[in-house]
Image (tube, rainbow, N blue to C red; front, side, top):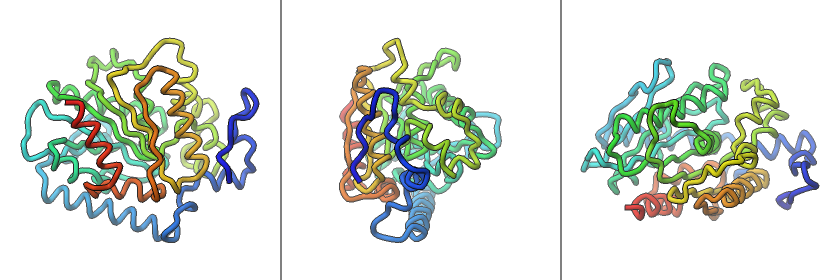
Length: 306
């Protein structure tokens, strides 16, 4: 299927899809190529679990650190061998369609990054149905403010999110930090196979635990919010890398490309990469490998800045 182009003004391409096709497009496990859907999800969970066990066994860490008062408001910090107050930090926000996933199985990138002197923070947020999208965005915002306050001399905070986590990270383009009493030293965003316009999700079964209204979706869609932003929000010193797996669905490709184009129009220093021969899950579990192309892109961006 061709990636749908832009329809007439105001007509989003996804609106031309049947309900079944929309469901299919937004079900990443239906697009995997090397294993069946269930086996892929099991492998994804297993690799995340093993990477986290290894990171906790081999890296100096602070685990289950509260960044707020809520039971689910915790984060894990993994440090490089040479720790300094001026470290660079990569904050990772896991995927799972805002309703599954855990920081306790998401330390994919810890070993390759800490080996290069980068501290990694893996963050938890309240999943649906307990958490609403508004709450999750607020939790992510507060977790970033917390890290900045804990490590005020950091040499840069870099946000990395996968799938729903990429959505949450990308909502940070629009944050008014003044009410949080701190302006985080954001130097980069790594948005991996994300969703930036939530409207289509409202019409799929994914929305069942989310209870998301059309208004909720629009209020939490960085694609729509950035398109509508009148003022210049961009920070040219902050690099944004938007990536999608070659075997992600056409809708995931369209969303990523359109979000990248919106960032460029808004003056952001953004680049777009289709990662060769990986699907929606392989793109993130391969971050356990230091020689994986995306791991190298992330490290180059973080280390090149200094």
